[in-house]
Each structure stands twice: as structure tokens, then as C-alpha cells.
Amino acid sequence: RVPATLVAATAIKEAFVLVSVPRDLAASQGWRILRRCYTLLMLFSFSEELSCVFISTGAMMLLQSGTLDTKAPSLVALLVRELEYEYVSVRHHFITGVLSLMFAQALRARQALRYQPALARAAMFAVCSSAASLLTYSNARTITYGGYAGMALRFCVLHLRLMASYARLAHPLALIGIASSVLALVFAIQATHEPTHAPPEERRLGWGLEMPAARRRG
Image (tube, rainbow, N blue to C red):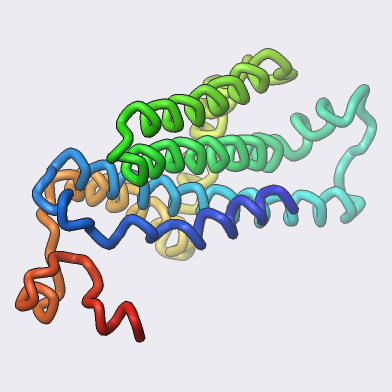
């Protein structure tokens, strides 16, 4: 839980650093998509890591409850048999959150170092290389589900099964969760084509989304 908490804190702290639009990039659709992808990846990382913390806490409570059959040849076998959803969810959320954070930072490096294109590409691909190496290691040392892809597929199956079992008017949170997931995907796709809207006072000044100097000093 501690590593997931640290990743979540980093993600939410840095999620909105690319919201302000530099003047030289205001008219570029490509850079606009990059900035929005960065923000979405960082917020997704934050959500994934908090989910990891929450579910791992619940799993620890269940393990200490005395209601589980703890006889098993290994701890992994015990978790897969008794707490498969929790086991898969914690692993999936943590790895996905870390990868999302790393890919977001690769995009951030690309924009921050745009005046040195070679350095920007070097930084971006260095972060992507680290992410790929971590995922390769995770797949090589996997014990269950055949690697990240198999684990992600199993998580989707278990999660959909859980949501479907509670998707009734008596349990509106499951319905809200399903609807929110669909809406998030729809609006994320829509955001790649949506024009940038500056606040009226900043549009009058012609600053785009850049913060006025007086406000920056304040």
C-alpha cells in the first residue's frame, strides 16, 4: 500500500501542470492532444493507485477475519482460491497506475524539452524504455495468469462479474460505476477534438490559457 500511496500522491500533485498553454503551442492540435493525454493518464494513475490501496486494505481485513480457509500449498494459491478478485485487482491497479504515470511523464518530457528536439525524444524514449523493461520483468516473473495481459483480462472478467451481480436499483452505486466508466471513455475520446476554451478575462487579454502576469505574481 505504501508504494501505491506514493505514486497516487505524485500523480495528483502533477496532474494539471500542463493545463496552461504556452503561446507557441496554442494553435497546435498535436500538442493539445499531448497535453490532454498527459492529464488523463495522470488522473487515471491516481485512481488506479487509490483503488490498489483501498482493495488491499479490504483484503488484509478479510485475511484477519478468520472466515477463510487458510490451508493451501502456498500464499499465492490461497489468495487465488479465497480472494481472487482482491489479488488480481491489487496487482492490476498497481502495475497499470505505475505504467500510466511513466507514459505521462514521457509526454511531459516531450513538451517541456520541445526546444531541444533530440533531447526531448531521448528523454521520452528513455522513460518508455524503463516502462517496457518493468513490464517485461513482470511478465517474465509472473506466477499466475501468464503476464500482464492475462491478468488484465482476468481483472476485467472478475470486475464485470462483480458489477453485474450488484447492478440493480437496490445497489445504485454499481450502476453509477458502470455509467461513469462509459461516460469517462466517451468524453476522453471527445476531448481529443474539443477546442481549447480560455476564461473570458484571459481571452480579452489575448493570453490564451496562459495565466495573466498579475495573477502569476499574486
